Length: 545
Image (tube, rainbow, N blue to C red; front, side, top):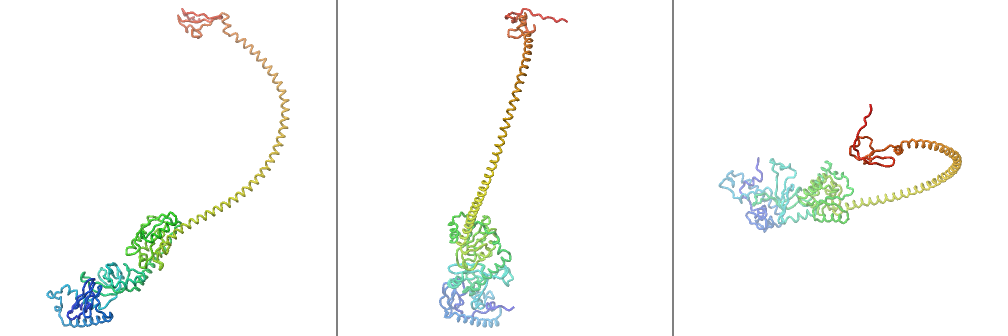
């Protein structure tokens, strides 16, 4: 295989190279002076040669009265060198090359001189490079990028056989950046990781770090905008195909959003504007703030994490707001990470991103998108106020309907009362007439019955008197007979006949000799008195057989 132009350049005798002036110095990094037949000066890489002057930044001024003419001259010189080096190669053996043997070893400076010369031959003028930004940093006004192939497989550079991703260090020096930065600001874009860019610049080597570096002098803003728009369209198509574009809008809109989850930067203007609307409403909102960055490289991940954390809070509504800014400041809201977090949310998400231009991807995925944080707060307050107003209207309608129904019912009651009164009065009159007639008949019947009963009672009273006298006579006769019988059994009559009654001292009537003992006092009752005596002897009368 034939050697490349770069490898050929590394194999010829550098004594045939003409002095490249400032070209030799502009490849080095910040503060690295160029080496060559001339001398360099400046605050960055500088070089000198025929017609060269003082340099600024990393680039030598090269004494260019006309930049385009000088580039043509550099290209011409490179072509001459290529021709001479090819002739030299044809007449030399492998051992004739500097550095081909230990005796002809190159110093480190000589090695880098040859590398730079080879790069000048391969890239005699500025070149355009495209790639995806992996990292952005700024130091002392200089902007540094890490660029990688954007259309290669993950972990593999396009056209490479190894798994190492091809990376290119890019530096835009402080004096080149203002023009590029102004152009980016005019379209509202900020360089950040993930953007695919086309940049123009010079290829060089930074001796101090032994690294290849690309010094950027221009950026294709139109291509960048087209790439951003294309990436945005691609993301929206992907979300739609996955059914995520409408996912949050399919959630029911909260009837009374009183429990609010807020995603924004704490103490920011957007935070103050939104919260101010809620506080001035007079409603008692339950607000939980998940503070996060809303711009910059880390913003998408923080916003998505904040939305995920609010799922545990269980809000009626999640609100994502930030203040106004350039289009580039809002790049986080076009990220796939934020879009998917909104689509996966179990609760409605409203946005108030504060940008009056194109809608962001977050706006497209959310349930409702408003222009500013203030408008978002006003919409929530309006929703709550409308609900309360609806309740008031319904209450007034219910009260009016109730009063109408009550009046109607009172009218029906009054009408029924009148009918009932008239019916009652009629029934009372009829009942009174019936009662008077019945009472008259009752009085007449009572009088007739009383006369009849009086006559019957008179006859019965006479019969009763006669019966009573007869019964009384019979009872008197029976009583006289009983009296006679009783007098026969009267103890006093028996005592008068000579009988006596013996008692113990305690008044017990003695009926047997077994009830007394010798020496015991006894009382003997006679018809005219009592005799006290003591028992001297007790004998029992034997019954005859």
